[in-house]
Amino acid sequence: AVALEMDADERLARGDALVKSLEKAGCAHAVCLKATRDAGVGVFAARDVEGGGVLVRCPVAHAWYARDGDEFDDAIDALRVDGEPLDARERLQLHLLNERARSDVDKAPASDENLVQISRARYVLSLPGAELVNALPIGWSDEDIERRLRGDLLSRTRATLARIHAVADAIARSRSKAFGDADDAFFVFSVDDLKWAHAVFWSRAMTLRFPRKGFTGGGDVDALVPLVDMCNHRAGSTATLEIVEDDAGDAFYELRAGVATKAGDEVFINYGAKGNEELLRCHGFVIPNNPCDVLAVDLRKLWLWKGDVHWRGDVAASEAEAEAALRERD
Image: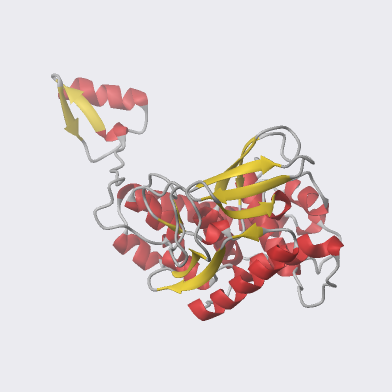
């Protein structure tokens, strides 16, 4: 099913339901959700927290990242785009869609065994809908894309849309061999579904650094991190996210305050040193006078002539052609 648009009140209600399910499943926190004027929903301190204090601490089982294979992973393994398998980020997006298609939180019995399952269903329900997709260039009409975008942002948007369509085609081709059940949720993933999953992943995914082999084999892992990923962006925020283990060896993800935070203050995280083109492409917003703004330059369009750098509007088809053009200009 295509994601429907949600207003801030509905997202806030669904976010509160997510927080309650996380609490039942062992998540401790010092935050609450509130509506914000600009971003819709944000994370706020529910009580005073000292610098370095824990704002959110949840069992790592609630984070979404690539895990060992299951039946659905076997189906993804069968997919090929231009002869190549999907990467880990695309696989996670398909798992997100599969969870959304299968989740039925109201019918799930409230037992200790399925608290993680319930929180995952609540997480999917809390995610923004079509309003997120429409804020990103991939959700715009072809006419608006061509009219409003230029340069690197235009080429990246075209490439992303082409990839989404290619994955959708691969899913359609795999129907006869990926699953035996024609009613499987995997078969109903459309281009619009894939746009939504792409938008959710790229606007919310964070890097979790696992300190040892175990859950993921160790190292850095792209993940969706419930509750933490509802924090809005502020350049310069010093809040930190890390994986910690208790004495029993159980792992948690922790968000810690970079500075003393008073009750009622919004909790911000830093999405990274991103220019406005990347912020628009991945998150759907820009920052006036962004200190991290950059200009992408295609180096193939630069050529040296008598020691000076010049600009050429056309791009040589090959290195040999470029060298020939330079010789002619010299």
